[in-house]
Amino acid sequence: EVQLVESGGDWRQPGRSLRVSCVASGFNFGSYAMHWVRQVPGKGLEWVSGITWNSDNKAYADSVKGRFTVSRDNANNSLYLEMNSLRAEDTAIYFCVKDQFGSAWNYFDYWGQGTLVTVSS
Amino acid sequence: EIVLTQSPGTLSLSPGERATLSCRASQSVSRYLAWYQQRPGQAPRLLVSGASTRATGIPDRYSGSGSGTDFTLTISRLEPEDLAVYYCQQYSNSVTFGGGTKVEIK
Image (cartoon, rainbow over all chains, first blue to last red; front, side, top):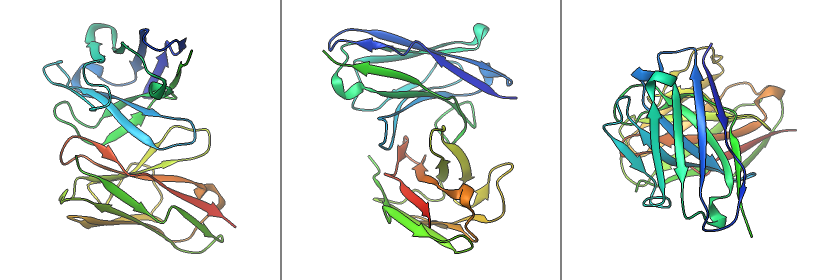
C-alpha cells in the first residue's frame, strides 16, 4: 500500500524558515518524480514544487521561487521542502504528492494527508 | 501560465441525477488533463488522467471527455458519497489546477 506521511508543519513568524518532510512507503520511491501541493483551508489547490526521480530537474511556482527549495533522499525514501522568508500567504496545508512517472511533470496518483504550516505574527 | 477555469462553482443535484462539470484551459493542453475528487476533510484523489482514462478503482459512473481547451467530467448517477469538490489539473506545460467545482447533494 502506498503511503505518504508528511511532518514538520508548525507556526512561524513572517520572515522565518521551516522545513517540512515526507516519508514514502509502498512503492519504489527513487523511480518517481515527487511534488508539493498546498491548499489554504477552504480554498483551492496550488502546485508548489516538483523534483524528478534523480533530482536533475526541480521546478517551482512563481509564488515561491527563490524562497523555497525542494530536495529528496532516495536512500531514505524522503522528500523535503525548505521554506525561507515565509509570508502570511504561505499559510496552508502542504501535501506530499507522487507523480505517475519519473521525469517531467504528469498527473498525481497518490497524495499524503498534509501538514499545516501557519505563518503569522 | 496555463489558466484553468472550472464551472459552475457549485452544483446542487439530487441522488440519481447526472452531474456535468466543465474545465476550460486558456490554451491547448492536448489531452494532458486530470480530474481529482476531494471529499470533506480528505486529501484529493485521482479520478481521471489523460482526459478520459479512469484511475484504478474509480466507478464507471465517472467519465471524462474533451481535448484541447474544453473538458468535461460527468458523474452519471449521483450518490451521496459524491459530495466533494472536484478539481481539474493540466500537465501539458508545468502544472496548474482549476479553482474547483463543489458538488452538493440535495
